[in-house]
Length: 112
Image (cartoon, one colour):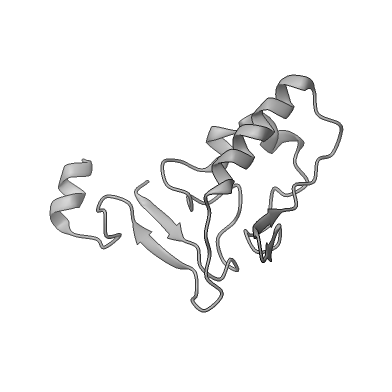
């Protein structure tokens, strides 16, 4: 699906289930982490805290992670490290078929 989220206020997009980072959802990228996560139904805002130094991610696990799962967690945190969110705007849906996030019929045909 070519619809995603532009996360600003962090209050609508689901952290793992919605496509808010581009590419694909975090469920698809990190399926094993999803299976052991206690954050499966939380929004981006529910598991992130904005600090002066950036965003802190409050990832909670149902059990201790295996060594190879910790490497996946590090990959996830590296991906999240570049996230910059504003507190002044609302989350909004965007069209991933265009760089500007605006739907056009031409981009829909290109996606087909």
